[in-house]
Amino acid sequence: MLAIRELRKTYPAQGGPMAALDGVGFTVEAGTFVSVIGPSGAGKSTLLRCVTGQLRPDGGSILLDGADMVPLRGRQKRRLQQRIGMIYQDFCLVGCATAEENVLNACLPELGPLSVLLGRFPREKRQAARTLLATVGLAGKEDQRADSLSGGEQQRVAVARALMQGGTLLLADEPVASLDPVRAEEVLELLRRLQREQGLSVLMNSHNVDQALRYSDRILGLRQGRVVFDGPPAAVTEAVLKDIYGGEAAHEAV
Ligand code: ADP
Image (tube, rainbow, N blue to C red; front, side, top):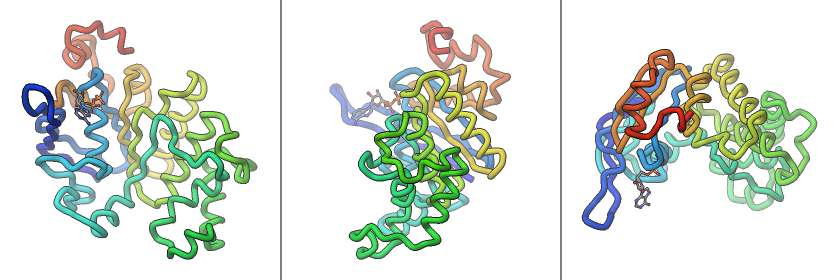
């Protein structure tokens, strides 16, 4: 589904360019849940932002179903990126819009400017948005303003919005870091259910090793811009964690 090869990204820094991604490579098979773990500054966010197209890598390839996104520009690039849903730590919803309108916002790129200006959406899109809100457990909250929903509910709206795009790959950047432990588990369980029932692929950044181990099929350990571990959660031993987190006590990351 997603294949990343030799990905490089450097940032300007005092004393010369600093490699945030230094030849990163891995694949996300269709229908799997992959978590990226690693210490702060390892390059996790940079990696996800390269995949979403927010950042342009300096080298390497990002193949989505075999098509390399890195050299693409303009409409071709946007069309491929439409197949990737994204959820963020801070939800990124329009607070004064309803849950349903937030989900419908995923359709804006494919609607004409008039529909966008008037906020008019075709009936079938509205129906699809309501169905998705029910799928994420928000039936009955469609017309509630996003900023009146709890954090866990807001993240569910964001998941429904990502699904509304119609893609089968969901990127999640610390999706539950702002939620209390119970809501965090609920959102992770939702992602796991969607992955298992709808064949969604999930690529998640997490600073919470325990959660990553419990919900993922595969773990990627990133350290200083390099993949230092790629394997199943069962293979993540104390020694592996020490390798990923360096001298830092691994249990502090759990
Ligand atoms: P993580 O998400 O694992 O904490 P990041 O991808 O945010 O790591 O950062 C990786 C490295 O790149 C860090 O050393 C960080 O300071 C640096 N970095 C990130 N964004 C920028 C930027 N916009 N400009 C310069 N350096 C950056």
